[in-house]
Length: 450
Image (cartoon, rainbow, N blue to C red; front, side, top):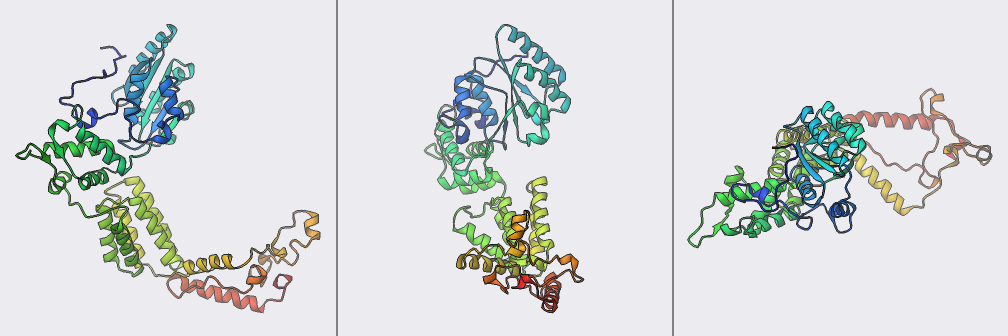
């Protein structure tokens, strides 16, 4: 078989092929998702329909349609389309394909090379494409799940248009599953599979935006469900739990239970109860909640309920988020667990939360006064003549590094927003603030006080 192997024909035998492969969209109209790229009149769709393509890179999570989109391009283009595996091919194979593409170009034929998992190519392999992309011998289409800024060499990346593909929404996954159940040619329609909406939503939740994973689960459920007396294969909740090999907890990411559980987690942390906090965190994670949503909520807890009573709380939560990004699930869940226990045991203070709230309230109730003249920078002679900077005292020129200069607008002079508690580090902060105020009272009057 030659290097320029043919793309799969429009009609292929369905037997033996996985459901996910059988249900791949054959046209742009069948393609679900990525409307911002492939909707009517969008530039990428127009390029595909007109067969006026440039080198491009599809970047997105597993199961979002990168390879499927490349196959649709293959079916529509008049160019020679060469699928290329980054796993199975090396520099030798690349050079052979490039030589054939260069020869084809002399005869007026264009070659599109599609490289799946392009991030698996090392620098030398990627370099082998570069002169041929520059010379126009090939159009290169790549697909990757990794950030191309780190995985694709800069000279090659600069010659490719990067399209970011998003995970499918839960609603889109459910629609794809319904299509597979109804389709008697490519799907499960002739097997009389039945699944209620809740089952499909659970599959979609578990698949987490990955259409291929959702199809695989549905196919496993269909194959593992015996037909009843009427020939129907009715997928049960128990069968779903068996296939997923874990208990499915009652949960709705947009319903009341979602808000009940996050409220329970937040209040357990606020109440310094690490056991309850761990329980509610695990309950949400095991139910399919987005771990990054939980990480963001914990960052809020660190600022809202702990603040400067333990400044490290914010560092710990941000580090947990980075650790989860680095490791991924399920091992990365432990980093979130570590953070939630730390937050639970940390000393508590809402001084920052209430102080910032008081500022916001004053902003709504008072006029937006101009910045006091002594706090303005006299960058021109005219500004100095108008009084900019007059009365300003440089704190570093004083022995205590503190002055009694007024820094708030005149109408808010003396207003106190931040009132540290006696908890944790804030106890020391409180002492320091009291010391600052004693120094300010003893300091000589300045124009800034007026």
